[in-house]
Amino acid sequence: MGKLFLYSVLCIIHMSLLLQVVLPFWVAGLIGLSISFCTYKYVIVDITWGVQILLVGIYVFSEPSLAYICVLLSSITLFIYSVKDRKTKNKIREKIARTEVQHNEYNQTFQMLKKERHDYLKHINAIHYLMQRQSREDAIQYMEVLIDGYEETNLSIKGEHGAVAAILHSIYKRAHFSNIAINYHFDIPCSKLPLDTLKVVALLGNILENALDACEEWHQRSGVQGFIEMTLQKRSGLYILTCKNSTVRLPQKVADQLFKKVGVTTKPSHDGLGTSIIQNIIEEQQGYLEFLNEKEMFTLVCKLPSIHSN
Image (cartoon, rainbow, N blue to C red):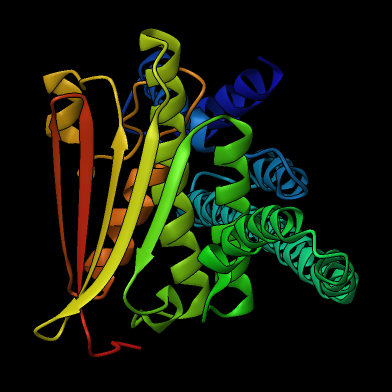
């Protein structure tokens, strides 16, 4: 409320003194007040406000002249600079936060691989011991458990670059923790997509996180385990990334705006930015995006030309 009051005072002073020659004080003041109400949500309180107040002082020590217009233009320029500067800083903070998350995921994947490598020889010795004792059934059972664990890891990271492997494995573990069945079927590694690594991570991460959210909501409403299946193929010069997942049927109003409008979501706690990020990445690469929501299943298909646009 304090920001609105101070900003309104500044707008009223600017308009009243600038327009005093052609309009009554109260009319110019109303114009300033209206401007402040329409634009205050974009205004950010920072060090430039001190300069704004000093600029207003010029009105006091000068006669009505061209200087008033210069003061107004200077004030507007400061506001624009302030807003753009804060937006830039926010984007940098968001990028740093995403990088930290990716770094943590990468580190977790690395530690998991390191542990498996460390334990590998122990498992071989255990199997060798069982075979020497001619405990064939025990050895087979031990190997089946061991293979299941390695297959889970291999499914997520086979042929993938570090950051991409990390996001795939992280989502895989989260799905299993939430009792969601998840499968990856990649004819080629996702790291081969014609995108830089950050965009691959953003694309896969947002698609799979949306799928996880949908499956969790599906399970809460139906009591049935949800599933996610992601595939990647290359056909006729196109990379075709497909994700299918369980979902409650989307309202038609939401479905019509999905991937078209920022902020569209069925969940009150979400900002709905994930779908717009997916759409932007696909559009930047001159790709195509299709989706289908029927019979309690959501299918998203992303088609990317094989030529890297960067």
